[in-house]
Amino acid sequence: MSRSWGRQDAATIVAALVLIWLMPLLISTYTLTVLVIYGMLALSLGLIWGFGGILCFGQAAFFGLGAYTYAIAAINVGESTLPMILAVIVPALFAALLGAMMFCGRLTDVYLGVITLVVTLILFKFVNSSAGPQYVIGEARLGGFNGIPGFHTLNIPGQPDEYIWGDALYYVCAVALLAVYFLVTWLLRSSFGRIAIGIRENETRVSLMGYDVRARKTILFAIGAAIAGLAGALFANWGEIVTPGLFSLGQSAEIIIWCIVGGLGTRLGPIIGAAGLAYLKFLLGQQSLIDNTLIMGIILVLFVLFLPKGIVPAVASLWKASFGRRSGRKPAGRRHMRRVDSANG
Amino acid sequence: MDLSFVILVEIFYAVASLALISAGLAVVFGMMKVINLAHGEFMMMGGYATITAVHLGVNVFVAMLIIAPLIVGLIGLVVERLVIRHLYGRLVDTMLATWGLSLFFIGMATMIFGNTTTSITTPITGFAVGDYQINGYNFFIIFVSAVLLISMYVLLKTTRIGLIARGTMQRSDMAAALGYSPDRIYMATFFCGSALSGLAGAVLAPLVGLVPTSGGAYIAKAFITVIAGGPSLIVGLISSSSLFGVVNQIFTFGISPVFGDVALLIAAVILLRLLPQGVTGKFFKGKM
Image (tube, each protein chain N blue to C red):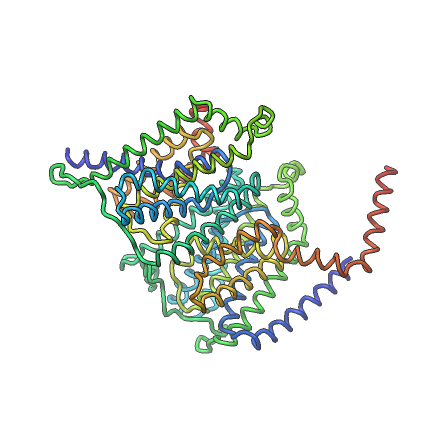
């Protein structure tokens, strides 16, 4: 069992490295960087929603928080290593507090969605109105609607003058996404991840088995927020400005759309959904014939109606149906055996 | 003295407009359990319908109270037949589909009306109370909101149609067994919900400059109010909008309008944490 997992992982790494190497030939690295960052952001929601069953309407809050933390810390510190670490820790702590408050109250589905949505709105309203000179953290002014420009962008750790930008930033982001992907994979294979999936399937049963559902949900929520924060910090480096728009409702919704279109309950789905839709939006933005919000809306409605499971699961089942015959004999036999077993029992 | 009168009117106005914003959603989400994220866009379309009708020479009150609800109701009907009908009972899917619809409507409105602010003047002039000026239109909103809530209550509580609708929402199989078509009743209820959203958008249109994206400003407030209200439709609507309206206005007058909004949202988070079933999940049980 473990050896076959290992082979699959090696194949994933090779495929990912080839993709990282090939993609710049097709799309400019400037666009690619943001696609990769969105992929990471989508993966963070894909983890907590697809595997933990926590529908968070405010993943953009953690994304924005990560970006703002980076910007503020970078202005105060003047280099990028510590701000990057802070940009992961601050959203995680914030999510841990918020999660503890929500999960200890045993709030579920709709209520959870509304509270996370409201928290995003509070952050948006607050940051949006922080234009005055009294809103200062250290040397960084929050800047209200205009955001914070001109902070120190990513540099090689220890060498504040060696900036990482352009192509190099793309490779850093892509490798970071790969690392996050394997972190998520590892997490889901660990007992923590398996219990998280158990909680998604049947919360009562898992809690009756003696697991502390509230603490586990909170930790998973915080991990998701940490990944979103990292994506936010990378986004700040890419855009070289952070604005309250990062916290907006539209941003939150877009993350959910990416996950749904790509496929919930998969690791690859959200990444593909995010990169694909963001690139589509980029292409649509270059024409002015039809408003691109309209097309995004139609895509979403059609997906919910006709492909509610998303691209990746649909493609996977199609793949199995057309190519899986030959190798499909073994599991079929095993299923037969199990049926015999249960008949005997 | 004058100031306290002005503040009192403002508080009533805040409560009334919250109830107005949320009424359509209370029907669609509270009764039908469809998370309609396109609610704000229904309101936006109500506003555009009013403004277009007024520009075509229709009396402003006719446009607001009759034309806009009808047009938005019909749009809602089409949406229900094409999309929502297939998704009843799938909470998350309705949410995503309606989000898609909201993007679609924003795109549509941008293509038709352009990304500019349109507005009409308020049809009722203001008057002075001592040193202060009060917008006369605020009284109209309070009036419309009160009439709306009372007629909703009467319709749902005392008429046969209301009974059938409530019964179908609780047990559609029983209603079907008794000879009523749940499909049609759902359709009619969604029509009413959309029409209410359209009415709200129309009545509020003269107060705001309308842009295609202005629906987004309402959606969060409407959801918070409906969810905090809890299972009883009208009592819940009144109690939660009173609570949030008062909190909002106190902080608006005390600090600033932005803090008024933030205080409203924080109050909502605290309330949902303490009473996850909403106000009427704990108090006023079994009322309408």
